[in-house]
Image (tube, rainbow, N blue to C red; front, side, top):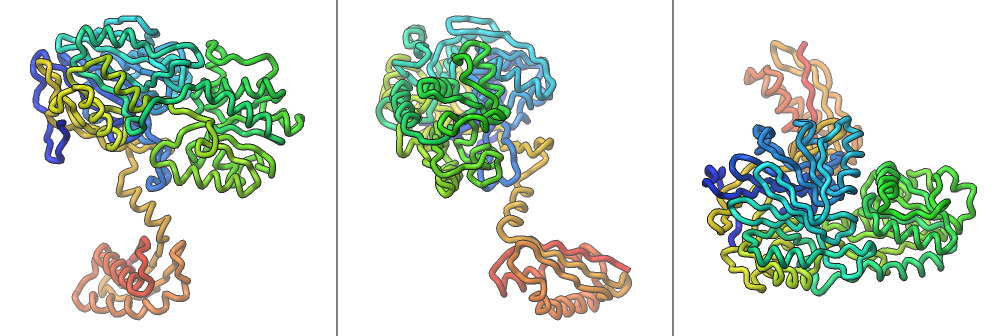
Length: 561
């Protein structure tokens, strides 16, 4: 198995007749999925998603793929193929279209409807091409065939990309539920046909590659939800992804059967479910869904709230309910259902929300204590089955953390893909398919691009480090007035601390040290403001470290008179 090395340099010129594959997100992480295909000087992008921030990224709203490597080639992009409508696959599209609004978007009906609604908020009217399974479209130099795959959102597609370099298949996110709620199976016959044709490179979903066996069918959940609804005494609050149409349909069905009304909470949930209903993907009995403002008029045992926040996101509705920061107050006897899997890295945030809800008396039902969710990604048994059908000549695991990528690579090798034709890449690592062989040839910039409010890319790791220090250690500010000629202190120092756990009065102990250090520097003829500020920072910082074993942020202000 080939794998990247830190010393990889920029990739060479793509050989004539070769296909270049550059993942800009989604490899080594769950989210931010984006892959760039290049042939004959033209580019085709598959997906452009976002990653949601973790605790060590305070203040960040979203994390985007890095567009640096394609920014000077936006005119070469033939289009963006969107495999399905989840945020980790479409959330970055508005930010790329800000740079070139006329890049065509290609996807299924529901996927395009979701991204068009999102783009409307950014005041972008996109060029779109609606496709469905079985369609074959020429997108510039790329001959694309779209294949139905089953996932946790309707209308998901895999894409087969034909170029003179060979046949490449990108699965997108998929599983092989044999009893899907919408009756839309992963089209194994199409994949078998592509396998017969000869798949030169297969990019396959790795998310569940460590999980043995097969994913249980979605239908198994309906019975469990029915039992939860039947036994609930008061309100039921369900947290789910705002795009999980299948799960919301099951919630609506259970509510209808138990004589309850449903209200959607949160802008994205209301928007997406409205789109799904209007397009016929969500079947809503008349009178079942009501406005959240009318819930106070209903008995508690007739109320169902559907909101976001199943991953413990700080600003999502469920987290705010757990923290008593939402207009909807959790009361003893409420039932809360977390209808989603835990995305790796979100465990602590989710358990914090569960504890908060339990504290207020809620009965919290989640995947750990009831079968209220099944994954949307193929497990190891399904992947083995899939590889035996496709028989790819080269395999490149995508969509997953390192452990998922490696596990998926091993599954491919077990089914007969030669080890030297299994490519484990990561974000930015460039893979060339030349004369039927896939090889890593270089690396391009593919770091995190942070969205913070209206700022895109302005926040760096240095800023996040400062925020973490402020959050963990606090801040100390020192104001000193010095004589511009002698450098001696003529006013202050005035010291204030916030969040450091040190009382302002305690700083009396450091003032003699500061006076001594400043006097010594004055004798040495040091009078430049920046040097004096550094001296103040070092002196106070050493005292705080020696006395309290803490390292707060220290902001010295030196004013000359």
